[in-house]
Length: 130
Image: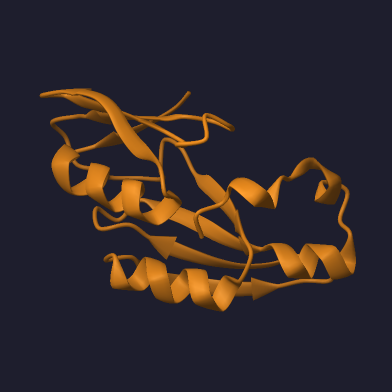
């Protein structure tokens, strides 16, 4: 699983459950363990920490989505804030910050279908909640 560290575990668990469509299968006062309901792909282990993030993220998620505009709107309704948008000759993505300020990217899968970057064949869009 991928581990991410947060101060407000309850808020961030709800945010990432809603953002990626995972379910919380195990939790305690200091962690939540989220998995894809189809049991495919990576799991997210969210861990509470006492200190605030003062520098760069300890982990950065890139989440490939079927529609970047729709996914950005959905993330913003969940409390994310758009930081920047980038479009290059091989990819189109938006950097957002979650409710605690941790940055993550939403990446447009259809743009990959058009540009076919080296990692294009490595994704499985059938399991994305976005």
